[in-house]
Length: 247
Image 1: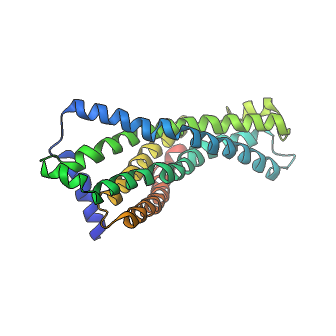
Image 2: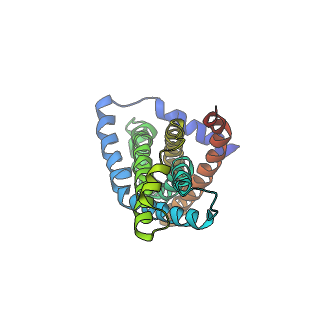
Image 3: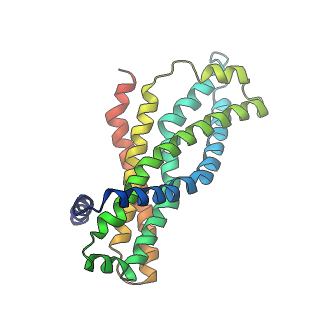
């Protein structure tokens, strides 16, 4: 409870004694490149294999002659949009971006750069952390959209190359019984996950004490705690929003 209270106070500090708007614009753009553009490659690789593996595994498990082949693509589509694209991408994102945020802020803390900002009267929490969280909230949904597209398209290429399902059946399957709220659901998850990863990682790095060893420990804690928070949020959002898919 002490850590939770400290985290809530930390988040509250983001909105007091803010800098000029132009300052945040520049910093948000820079952070967006770091957390978004620089993560595209790893997200694309992971998503391609997710789509391929999901297609093959589903095809080999749905072997009943009573089940049409298009059902395979239907399963791949919904699994990708509802779970795999947001959650798996968030875990990869926590490993890459979360550790980077914690390491950067932790290094600034132990080298007293954060203390220097505070001595000059600058709200270090707002100046350093707010742009990172905002950039993460803005860019992570874009990464999830990219992940979903690549995963579904990878499944299509896998169906053509392996023959587990025809391309025509795959295209039919990804269109049948489509619920538009599925995309909204994925975007809600993306915004929440983007916030959690950036905020928790920044919290771990900002309060680092010690030396280089503690910076490494903060990065490890940031990744671990972010993954746990993402999985807990995944369950909570599924419990609250899943009924709307059938409403």
